[in-house]
Image (cartoon, rainbow, N blue to C red; front, side, top):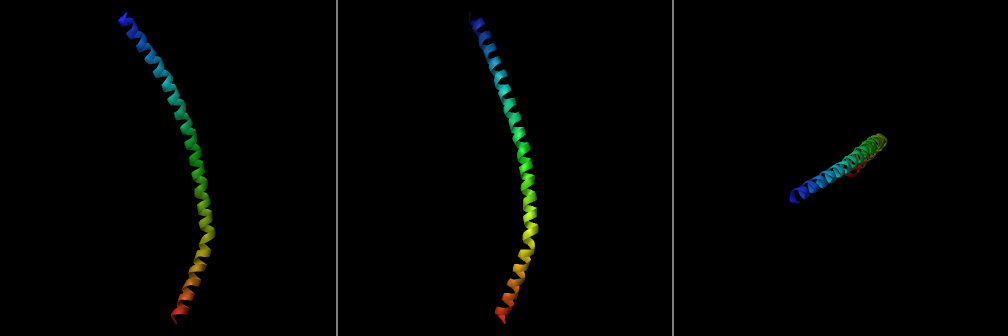
Length: 76
């Protein structure tokens, strides 16, 4: 009886392993989908940052020019 129980237990472990490996595969597929979505979001964020930098750069330069002008006037 001990050998039969051993094989039954071994069979049950095998079924559990197959079931869990299927769960892992499903979760991995979900992660791949979310990763693809995250990559798209990251690209959109990079585009937004470049657009913002393009819009703000002239303002930064104008502020720097005014700051330099004020510094020169204060020092004279």
